[in-house]
Amino acid sequence: MQAPIGVFDSGYGGLTILKELKQQLPQYDYLYLGDNARAPYGTRSFDTVYHYTLEAVEWFFKQGCSLVILACNTASAKALRNIQQLDLPHMAPDKRVLGVIRPSSEILGSYSSSHHLGILGTTGTVQSDSYPIELSKFAPEATVFQQACPMWVPLIENGQQEGPGADYFVKLYIDQLFTQSPQIDTVLLACTHYPLMAKKIQSFLPGNVKLVTQGDIVAKSLATYLQNHPEIDQKCSKNGQLQFFTTDNPTSFEEQGSLFFGQKIAANHTDLA
Ligand code: DGL
Image (cartoon, rainbow, N blue to C red):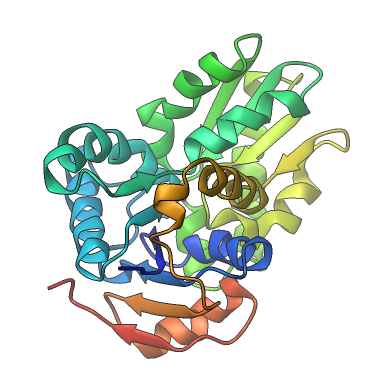
């Protein structure tokens, strides 16, 4: 049986990844789920994020998906390893769950000359140390500096990314990052919400600094994965269709979500049952 590729986020952020997937791999069908009723995940405990993410993955499997992308750094940081190592082997050994941290870590080091890398993410992603751990494998020459930006997701989710509050909190966290090392020349937006504020973030960065978002990286990595895994690719339906589900109000999801996705969307509600 063929089914869409599942794309999961705590809320709207994963739509910035789905946008690139659709652009670069338009032939596939995608099923998006935002757990808006329980977002944000960024400040929640390891166990809570793991539990919520596992429920979402089970929901995707019930819809028939064989491949699920956790398009959320926080869920990738706190739930992916457990799901891959503890749950999948007995729950669904033929299905796959992938995240966004590894593909980003594989490429990030190649952008830097100073080998001082900056990571901006949620408190959960930063505290998990997932980026320093992954980057030590793929960019062992690099020194990694992390800064949690807990106010950015609430600002973005409330449509305040262009307001004066955003100026204050963007400057605050950028200053805190560069206080750790003025030599940082590459900064990763390690939260799928942050691309909505990328212009503002760039405007507060020193001119020589490269700002990296994840959509393009994840799409290229997925293309390679599907080429290398024909047994999974065969199970992904290819009619170019998109479906959107939220655990909260679909009307709000349609309004806010289209800002992240860059075009109008029609959403349905699910309670994950
Ligand atoms: N979009 C999620 C990420 O990439 C974070 C949003 C949240 O805190 O729920 O980390």
